Length: 145
Ligand SMILES: [Zn+2]
View 1 (cartoon, rainbow, N blue to C red):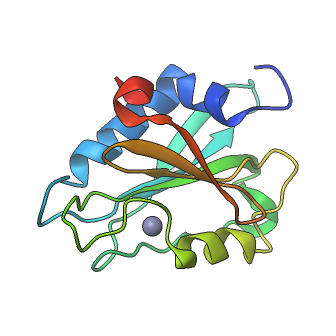
View 2 (view 1 turned 120 degrees about the horizontal axis):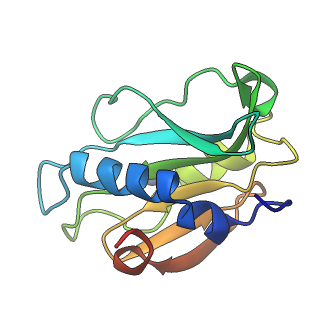
């Protein structure tokens, strides 16, 4: 892959795309009964990207596993992600204040390769940048097909 990695290029990698589409489906999107799914994207020695999923958390929040120095088992983290599967009017689609602070204030998510956290929602995939800003990347249906 070309460096530096860009958020949309990462999403377009087939391994990443299919893993995020699976996470979305497994989070049971709908008006009720959804739960967040998440994981992270790492860069392997062969320059390919892999997605590591983590266990489902309680309620609507999930907790990121240990990732000292912005790496997992020596592989640099390029992105993290989680879903916002609840589409009812009481639920926020875009990244929450907690989501933004979680990325911004995580001193272990400051590696040179890290582009931010994808938030996969019904309409849109958002990116929370390492500084905690929110960008709309594109429509979920277009990105994950
Ligand atoms: Zn969230």
